[in-house]
Length: 520
Image (cartoon, rainbow, N blue to C red; front, side, top):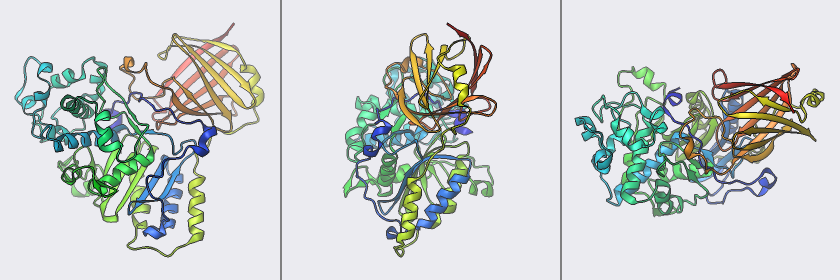
């Protein structure tokens, strides 16, 4: 719920990915060594138990990668998600922004004690309060900006994010009170760009991404070309695991010190307690009450993590010499972590375990079979004639959709949505996934700063459809480089079409009902 209130979710700039027909060659570079679980002291049965429990939970997992002793011992993607696709990190992006601050600090371009206003003397409000004057880079890193409420849901609708942030009242002394503030992370990104002359994305390229073999990435920007910092970075699952491994190895990569070990220590250790007044029992039961670091969270079991909305995790477990990367969509992020602690934590053993070829095969088969079911194929396909090639003129709506046309052919439904400015052809398979790309924006919590979105490349999608017993056509559209899905539910009543668009992350409230009439 915290994320639903505090994180601005804007459409991310996406890298082009391969079509499903090329999936067999859509493999990641073998930059991380693969090994068998038992050889690295990990119980395959424990991983199987986790996967089985995940299937029974209310969480929708999209990918998982487990590293032990620097080697991948298990990896899987729930179809239609796949290894070669990037996946939005949401607030996991913050950990990368903080790392850019770490590099800037190590290169003596800034100090953590530097005042935020010192970087933007031309953006200051008419009156600079003492607390604004005293706000430091360190305060922002540890989410103690002193603002309340979090301004993230307001500022991105404005033209000048820096000016708006500095004009936001500070009601707590900086450094004393924790409050999640994604715009503060944006300011860290702006500071990096100020002192380096490069965006965080470009600055991290030769320092972080290139040495780790991370490529094909992208990051949203504000209207002035500054990376959003607190969200908007997209990486592959293996890239997430590499970043976690870099921190596990205290900044070393393949024997070379990439990131100063002193920074890794600073960035991953407790800096502030979220709710000091909470009872110890309450704090012990939550992975959000273990303390906050520099744009990272402490976890139970002496672990720490990068953490993004809807369950994007980079979990670093020093005691187990392990890293776990997860992408997903969930409304209960603690429940996902509980599954990790219940099933995967005890799977890590000291030393190697006896080889078990049969169990190894069973785990590989399980990982290869992971899937999110498409809409079921039904015996009501005779209903398709009632919709086929009809043009429905839609009533005025917030998405500015003007008309909808359905075309059915050989088990594929093509829905053409026409707006004022574009036509979108969306394809859905009957009982199976059909893959494609679209420039139509998917479901997001906040729709704002539309001017930033016009140059985005297409989004990777997967669609399926089925007929319900009440003769309702249900189209499932997955934006597979994000956690989110949009369900389009259509019912024909005579010449009238009732079309309901439902967001996966808020099905009760996040929907739009559009009505239309058959036209010429």
